[in-house]
Length: 298
Image (cartoon, rainbow, N blue to C red; front, side, top):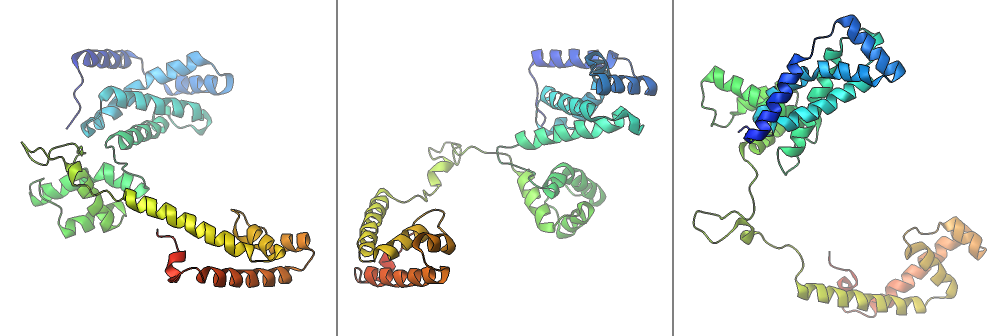
């Protein structure tokens, strides 16, 4: 459903459209002259004349996207941003008309705006999804027209496969986008039925740990920390240093670094580390009845 502006906004949009349509068209030579003045001299008057002449292209492009339920004025503004981007990158020496070059930038700016604002759920995060979002309705309408099916029916398997082939995407992506476009955003505060006091959010399960589980987890973590401290105390000073530097830091020291610090070879550090880990394991296992108690629950 298209967005409907309030009367004041409609008048402002109409005034902008009329002013844009009154701008004179540019000849090829004059267009290139303006582009060169802006590119080589930074002449802002040339830039403004060039951009104003093609705001009609922005309006024409915005009219093709007006059925996505977003304000026409916002689409035009986004298109103007794309037009300015095109003007800043346009190279007149390539002998391409500015309108041809700018059309891609204008359309891209509007499409990005639509994808960002059409839904609170992010849509079109990949090239395939973006292509589906802007072409699925058109291709579906072509299928409906050929088969004379009602537009409310879901696509058949053959229809999905045909669209996937046309857009070079997976059938699964066609199915996902079809479902995505078939329903609008809905608030979790919406009643589940007319006259009901229950909202949809009332039926969402809270997956977070309960207060009791949080407290038990904190106590278990404290107990395991105590066990580890006691087990470390049973190691020799050199073994304790190796374990702390290798295992108890975010970025553990290398065998070579510890070897230089302790005055031994890398292989000797590895042997000492292995022996210390075995001592720690044996010491910790003596403190529990079930080895699983040494592992924190996810």
